[in-house]
Length: 308
Ligand SMILES: [Fe+2]
Image (cartoon, rainbow, N blue to C red):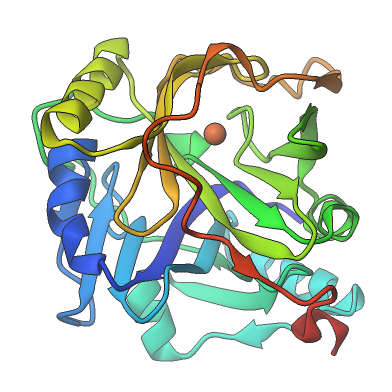
């Protein structure tokens, strides 16, 4: 399956409206109109593809969709066939789902942890229109996509098999931490577009990483969090595996945003060697004032959607 990048992310949150200021003023994201004109949706982006991150007002803090980009309609059809052969129930999109996602076409399915994924092609692109919400030099996107996400999954082995075996994601490396194991996957030169952390009985979106093009942007965002009293989830630090220089801020919706710069990329042309590490950071990334993540939900040992 030819997944090219992380295309978009949708979350639901009671605090959706706070993103109308947090997104542009703190993170520097651009805002755009919701394509369906829904008043309870905040539509944000870090480049010239509008709606890469949308937050819809709703009762719980939860991730409602991850969108993965495929290169064209032929690959979308091939992906649908491959999912069906693997015993995964594939759902075709309605016109309003295509319009909401601003893509030509998409299919959706549920992963072993119960997360809703969409595979799409033909995302709306408006070249030259990106206007960050505050003065800044911009984000690293393009072929590397929106950024990366880290998901907490109840059964690491099942999710690992699924992302590697069914979706064809390639393992970058692993880190042993918090008594468990985090596995990092790449689908393009970005060191990881997805990582999964196994915590029995729990699932949720741990964080979304947004990468800026200039180290000073990390400092400016760090200052803005301090000035506005927005608690950090983790202090400044540098990761061991992708060498990202970053801090983590707790968003209004429970999950965290890792705001980073300077990550290494993966070169699949010259054979990539998988390693494992025993610490996520060379220095820093100490717990901040935000407290434990507010985005995890308990889940039954086996997901009913997956069993069916
Ligand atoms: Fe990260």
